[in-house]
Image (cartoon, rainbow, N blue to C red):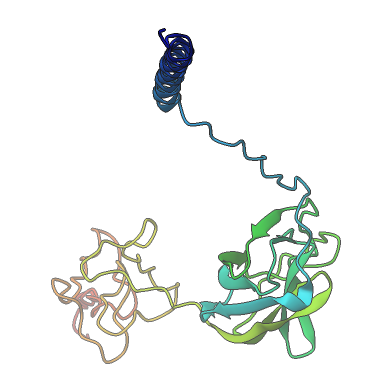
Length: 276
């Protein structure tokens, strides 16, 4: 009697388990290969950069600089009375923010005085058109302004008179308030005297030799001058060269010599007979 039944069942079970193990290995291998290829494909993809939100900038206009946050300087050199004078000025933004200043002549005015006498102001006849300068924190702007050297009146009134040599003071006001530190004293000197013409230069037209006039009738000629023709030299003067003693002409035949012009020849008395 043989015992083949149970052994056959065990072998079938083992064979089935082996088949399942092989199938599981195949499935695992397939999944591994798929995963490997997937990783390779992911490595070739470009890196995705996260988007950044755009920065928002304000489009609002900067505000006007506060007057107390501005530092001013004003300088000038001595000039010539009646000639233009340059004023050098500078402003620094100490407000800590971006801001603007209006440098229109009526908003930023220069004033020149001499003692209590008001001489000139840029606001008298300046343009009121807005002229804005944008200043960043700490920025310094350096400019110059000119005074023509004449007096002025409010409302562009014509004066036309130039100032005289002397001591003057210029100051700066911004938006109607005196700018701290923006004032200085300067001197105006007389204009230089004209230079004489160089030696040897011909005189100007109309400045030739002066023709001396002959002395009036009855006047003696000036010392060293010859008397006019027909005039006797003045008493005590020698006759001019070439003017010797005047030769008196003999009287014509039949005329008697003028009185005092020589002895007249008297006719001889007629011959008279003797007495008796």
